[in-house]
Image 1 (cartoon, rainbow, N blue to C red):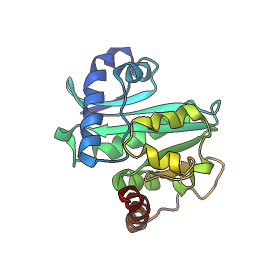
Image 2 (cartoon, helix red, strand yellow):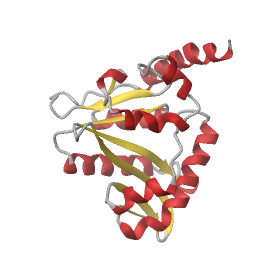
Image 3 (cartoon, one colour):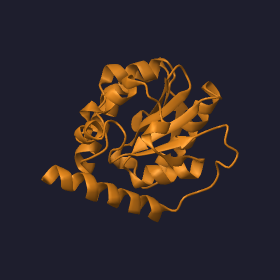
Length: 203
């Protein structure tokens, strides 16, 4: 297994990356926006992604993107192929893409939005903290990427202030980034959001 910074040679994996993301969204049922191969290819070609390969077989992926003129950087699209789940691969990919983000954009705030408890835990271990959406980028190009998520109506209904996703932020200017948050806190937060927003959807 190798985990590397992507380049043009990895564009052949764009379709399977998108397929894996789409299938994960269907299984989870929430919180994962679809990506098109053309979009993924730009990340691969510009070395703004990390890819995990088992020989020539696709195993995992995550990409970075700068927003608000480089003031913010998002780590997005973290996915592990079903054949390689449960072996700690997501944690390794997340650590490498986070380091890559900090190298390319050392002064940027690194953020993520997710409904996945496992990703929240990974983020917390790296020094991210849960924050309100108002503390994240206000670049509308980023938020338009949520349009393919089944919960996009919640984001619209709350005027982009809240959703089922949890916003998490790493601020390099903060000295106490290494305070970790217990997983049960994220579980409780997720339950509260679901009880609020999903009940409204059923009315």
